[in-house]
Length: 446
Image (cartoon, rainbow, N blue to C red):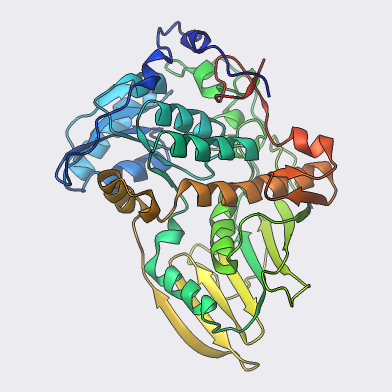
């Protein structure tokens, strides 16, 4: 990697905003006690950002101090809605996240931007002394995830990842049953993401809408003309900004699979699929199968453990008793020698023996936002239920699946060095070349 980009370069933006990185070395004060008010800034106000506001708003001594979005059109619509719905006072608005990081009165930021901006904002926030709640996946590639883990450790920041199912007390109970041997020896876990996603069609190039700060939105990605299929939500299906559904909904299943199987990173990955049925602007697959192989922790077992994940975006069957009222089929199935377990959102069910007799089950939801605020106050990183390291490993699985898919071959991986073995082309995809000045610290710039 090339040396970190000179911080002065980051002051230059297409809009000429004089906001640099010099302020980012400052830290907010340590917490004096549990009654101190936590001032939160939410970055990204569409989609998940609204959920973030709704989660923090009712918490005692938590203030939504600032909301930030590169699309200034959203403020006139969303802020009155949020004030009425949640009873919050009118927050300050910003379109440039760097100004938010410059504000010493902000204690924590909550990030609901497109994937390609997650790590950049999070690392800079850690350097600025802010605690971070970041949506899934926390990285756009494997290298970024490791940089964020290191930044959280270096600056002693609370960094919570948005894989909220991990907070469910019911799911945690189910995982304990797995540890206790309820379904015997576990040999495979499968994640499902069967969702109804229609074609996105073709979108023409057009002028950037008034009020949209498109250069900042593109951030580290290459400059490309504006189209609606590179913008709100459909960015998920473009490699420059998103990671397909394996890195969108699928990262939740990856996280629970890792939790259930008690594993981090695999030593082998393969993935195949395609963008079937539709002819449109989508670059990522709408049908994808990924397999990960882990060596067993038991020296007597040389067969290892298999993890499988599958995306389907159209006509499909239901599998594993995971059908939701929306007709989607999303969740996990864990297979053992004495039965299997299904995990569907915040619920788990077990089926034991050859007759698949119903076993223990439970439903219960937890709040990753509440857990985050509690840890902001206590400064105990070990109490984060969705800690940055767990988020890094789960996000890395998504990136590994996509790398194997794009290269069309099975890849061997070193989970300690976090790099592919004997494959220079795959190792190039561990990171990206970042467009100045939007460079993740330590990254290669162009």
